[in-house]
Image (cartoon, rainbow, N blue to C red; front, side, top):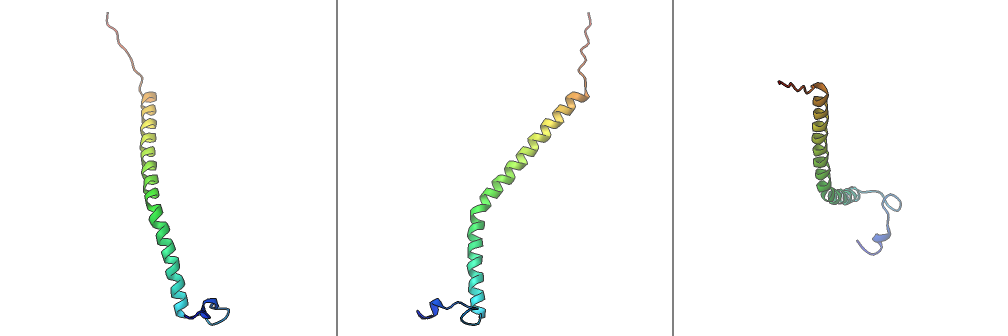
Length: 78
């Protein structure tokens, strides 16, 4: 590329070539990879937190249903 070619826009000043498309796709892929790498840890932590919350919620709901279902009867013998 010469300094003259830097200001040429594919599609406007010249036909779009295969190399132009490949270069743009590589650029987009690089951007997506960097975003993915930075957000994977956050996603794993969010899923783990959600799973823990669901387990705690199931425990609390099951415990309250157990209390409603069975009455505690105290028998005194005297």
